Length: 260
Length: 251
Image (cartoon, rainbow over the protein chains, first blue to last red):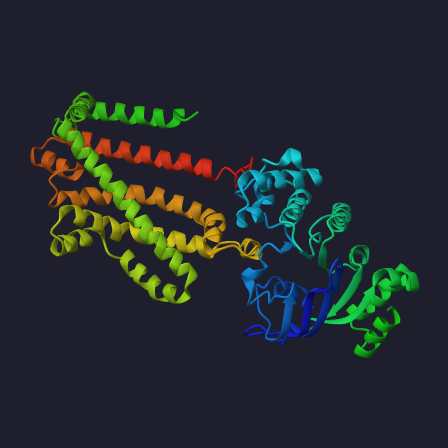
């Protein structure tokens, strides 16, 4: 069953000098999959992410998330999607615990219940000692952990991550990546993970979609199959070729075929 | 510690200087500290005079609260609607140029009721500051936080309660602090004309009797009221904005 389906999606912003941010985008995410979307900066990944959230609507084409239009049917998806953004986006006036419980509060879960869930998630991520601290008093890694806890606390059906570790140092980013992957597996979530790092895409995705401007899937890899057939170095090089536009459209499609 | 030594020292120096000057000038110009203190005690011990002081304090608080509600809603509306913003901002800018005294004259001509006149003057003079502050704070809200909140698909009320209100609160508190001082000055001017009770009215009586000690005592009462209310707002601000980090070294 498709959890996410983009069919011929295009997005053009008013006054966009360079035409479309996303064009001819087709993609499917199946239930239980963790799909990594990798591409260069400015290739339309974040626009795709905002289309997925429903913050913007498509100029053309059709988007379905859990069978609903995320833009037109905005409130129907309440409590079913969760997000981890590039920066932590914690509310500075709320304690760590209240930030984790934020999504539950918006779903009107009783206070005692949501605080219990919040404490549980903070403890899973090793932050129980910091539950009363405000975000400005926490490190970048701690804040991003809290934003991960906030995303999981509402028990979403689909988890969306937009380059969540790009602002962190390599070591902290790798730790959090492993934690996120473990949590997705443990909780049987479906996930879309947007990144500009090829290594991160390989480390986290069951499937890798390589994006190229203007916002379309230029190549696709099933990570385990591709690793078995090509090895990590060659896989990285192939992804890089597609990202860097060295491979033409036909060649990119051939790469996809070759690794299926 | 709530009271620091610096303001106390400043006040003591001011009092000592005044007392010194009062030795060389007649009481009608510089009354002694003891005669001012006696007047203050008289005011606080006289039920009628206390009512006069309380009437002014009530006008300040009710008028500023009214201006806060109307100005705040206007500021929010301007923040949400660019059309409202385009039409309303020039009107508010125009209003900023009108002196408080002009509103006093206009309100006397327009309205019969003294209380309504005073409330109207307070509203017209303090509304823009609330509207501008709320509008600016709304516009300055973090787009990242708005997107994050919207991603949970909240109701409009929940979005206001959990994101918009905390975001505009610092601006509102600043507007309250600024307006409390301004309104206390405006309300006295408004009370000078037509009011039969209030600090402005009492000041007018003292002026007609050339009673400088009484005039200063009434002025001091108003100053103390403003300082106390501003201290309450500042304490509220410290509590509500306690999440803000403080740097060891100031910029």
